[in-house]
Image 1 (spheres, rainbow, N blue to C red):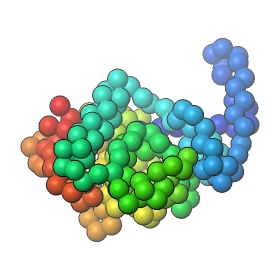
Image 2 (cartoon, helix red, strand yellow):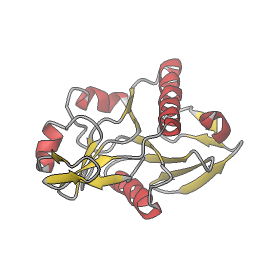
Image 3 (cartoon, helix red, strand yellow):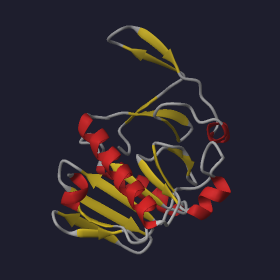
Image 4 (cartoon, one colour):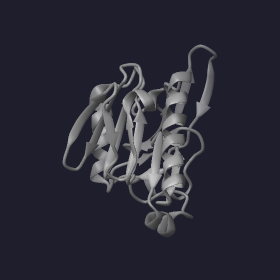
Length: 194
């Protein structure tokens, strides 16, 4: 889930229940120091709620996280795998679906409330309602902010787009993806999506 979000104004009216939900506006620095719980990201000066989570999305997100974490533990390369934790890009405050933090960065930043840069490896599970422009713009935002590899997982289409600083590749079916960041990790699209 990359950019399926609703813009939160100072007050948002829910027309179905006539409730008012107040979402205070904060600066990016405030968001970094104390990231709000839930799926709130800091985008262009506004708190934005990530939406579009489905059972399929959750299953794929969990599976990617589990596969990456299993590799980290079994290979002994170290580091940590997270789901929906905050990081600061050059422009925004984001919460990627799945992220890997190397041992060096974990030692340096592991106790902060928000990673002050993009994670080295990020996976975003794309929802059917996500706009293509936003999906790729967000991936490039991560890459401009010290991320080395972004996986865009299109589970319904059963394909994965992997972007690095130097390449853009599309993988389908039995094609194996070998991670640049997660040393020694390789998996086919079908195996990853189950």
